[in-house]
Image (cartoon, rainbow, N blue to C red; front, side, top):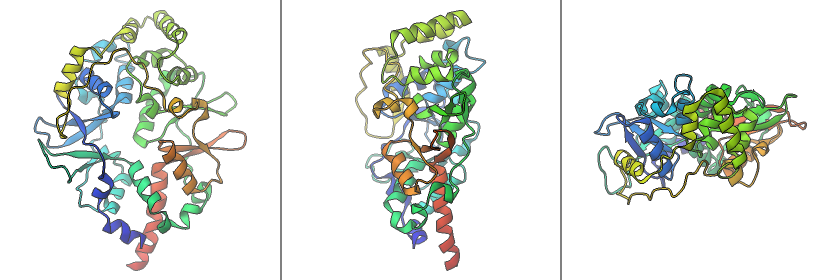
Length: 379
C-alpha cells in the first residue's frame, strides 16, 4: 500500500507553496552572486546555462562563496576572486541538480535523490504567469522527509525502531579537533554541504564539542572568510554563533591574526561592504526569478556579518547541537530534525562521545528499502 501511495502521488504535491527559484545567468560573477544571496530571502540562487533559461546547471549559496574565497589560490587576493565567473562556484558534477517533471511520481523523485541528486528542480504548474523557461522550484531531502512523516502510518514498524537497530547511524567521518585550523575543515564543509550533514568539532578526549554547519555558514556573509582563514575550528564556531555581529574583541583578534599572517586582502574583505545601493542595483539586474516582478529590495543600512546562526536563532549554543542516542526511534529523530530545521542529528553516548550521525538521506534509504519489500511481494 505504501508503494502504491508513492506511485500515485505526483511530485507536484511536494511543490505546493514553494517559491520560484531566484537565478543568475552563467555570465554573472561571484560578486554578483554574493550580492544576490545577501539581498534575497532564501539562502540559495540558481545558475542558468544560457540567457534563454533552458536549464538550471547548478545552485550556489554562501558556503560556496566562503570556500572559494578561502581556497589556496584565492586566499591572498579574495577581492580579485570576486570577479571570477559564478561557474567557478559550481561543483564539477552537473548531476547534483536534477530536473524532475511535476507529473512524475514521488517514488521516481525519491529515487533521483537517492541516486545522487543533491537537489531536484521541478516546474511549478500552478503559476499563471510564465516567463523565460517557466517557474521552477527546489526540492530537497527535507521535503521528502516531511512527506514521509505525514505518511508515517504506512511506514510501521520501521519508523518505531531505534536508529541503531535500523543501521542508519553513519560514521562521523567529517570531523576535526577544536584546535585544528578552520581552513583544514573546508574540504569537509564542502562534502557536508553535498551530503546535507555537518562537520563535527571534537575535544582532545574525543567528546563532541560542537559543529561547523553549512546551514549556519549559509546565514553569514563574506566577512566570515576572514575568520575561516585565521581561526581554529573551536574559535570559529564561537565567532559565527553569536546571534549577530561578533563582538569587537573577536573582530580585533581576527584582524591581528590576519596582519600577522600577511593576509592583507582578507583584512580588506573584512572591512568591505557589498551592500551599497549601487551594488544592490547591479545584483537586481543580474538576479531574476520567473515569479511576478517584485520591487527592488532596499539597500542594507549596515554591515551584517551574520544573520544569526542556527543555534542562536533556536536559543541554544553551538555546543548544544541537536543530538540523540543510539536507542532513539527513527520517528523521534525525524521529528527532532524537522522541528529544529536541520537535515541531520548527531548520535552521542551517555559520555557525550560521538557515535555517528543520522542524516535525511539515511532516513530516506531506510524508507525506500522498507517500501521495496512489499513491492517485490506484489510482483
